[in-house]
Length: 428
Image (tube, rainbow, N blue to C red; front, side, top):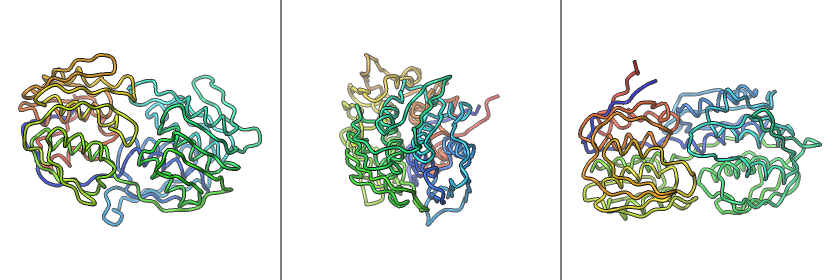
């Protein structure tokens, strides 16, 4: 496994271009199963999770072509996926175990072929994240569910899902996406209530519309889908990654630097920008960029993670790193995942003063982080280590950085371009 070495204490300065959103790209790739015609996706980031999804789709029989050229100046690659020859409805453990998002192939397989078998998913160890909400929605649409030998087997009697009125017990991005794709080919009308409103869900819905789906209420918590007989070819550009953008915003703030983040609509990371403003960080926005000026003293904030448009759980670890340096005491409550504090012991090794009580953190600001050897435990925890290391004046070594590669494209290259002293090395 690789390690990352960072010599911190350098204010980041310059410009950074945001990549396509991993959390949007993965369900968009899975949507290729719904059609026997090609789906072309541009602005695809080069990440290990993307590779995992690509491997799964190829295993199922999707024909996949990769074009490394930039598309109209966008970062990322172009994928053309054709589901014409899908010949397997089983997503195996050896692939699915690497990434929980693999579960989003269940809805498309069931909708098009009337059955699917999916290994119970793996990925970051940040909580149970059960798939009950996915299965309940599909059962409402006529699917029968069986859990056997570590696999979820779903199927319909006549190979066709039926429209249904579905109210999610709680907001779930994955369950909304699976149900949305399944409903696109179901017979009749489906209504999804208390649906996730995340921009990544809207991006999926907009792509499905381009493929011929009939969807109303995009961007709201009530989606109405009138099923169609088939979906057709389409082209779609993946929206920029708001979590990557928020991470670089905090990188600028935590180092006392000034960074312009290009290729992002500020509206989709408004909750993150609002919290940064509350903490005393200067924010300047245009239609397609955010400039973060971190000069000044950080003020403490109280934050609760919430579904969109609230403060995202995927930014919690990064904010913890920043608030560890605030002049006072901050409180951060995690309401989405029950086990998302594994970065805390590693930040404490670097000098942070953090107390955990249930789902709430009490963070007393310290003057500075200090370098240490730390270990990444999940995707967002790993980047919290990077942020703390960028501020620390000594060297920090971060191990198990394969987690970072799941969600941050070319992170060393982008940080180096902003002036950071960061090197990746093989673990010997």
